[in-house]
Image (cartoon, rainbow, N blue to C red; front, side, top):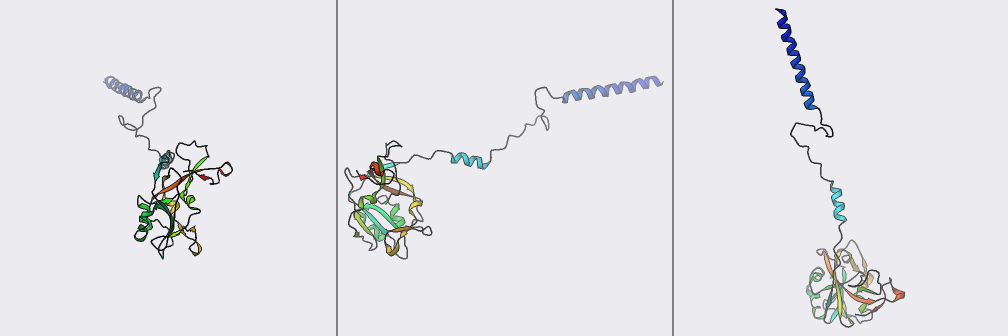
Length: 233
């Protein structure tokens, strides 16, 4: 009677061995394919996004928008040497039509530069539109160069002065939209003569950009790179 029982136990052992072998073969990775970890049927998570610093560098590498230079004509142009009312010390050089001088009595500096008919004397130095980058025969420079030898008059506000400008034919000036940062820190110089820069003073606190006015100048060969030359229009 022991023989049938022994045969039954041997059969059970063989069945268990076959099942273990089949399970091991099912788990064996396919050649050429990386094993997938985790539960069967669950996709691996996507890679993390690039760091914020990488994205910031990409934005900074983008090209800046092209410089926009427009031509304008101003009837009876004057350059105002603006002096802020006490206790303020801010100064600015403004370009406007002579008929608009009355604005100086009722309008703050911040409001003046925001008006479409008022411009600031440009501080930059640009190539005129259409000129090759390596051509230095002509430059756009501030309109104050048109007033070097002109007589000064008292402005209606009683503080500022102005000069009449003689714009050579055909009477065109150039306007560039610029950041206000380089224009906001001018204050009056010693004995209220001239101007100086004081970074503690912000004369244009609510202004982000200004419209700067320029005139076209022909630069002599000996003066190229020095800002001199003849005003041609």
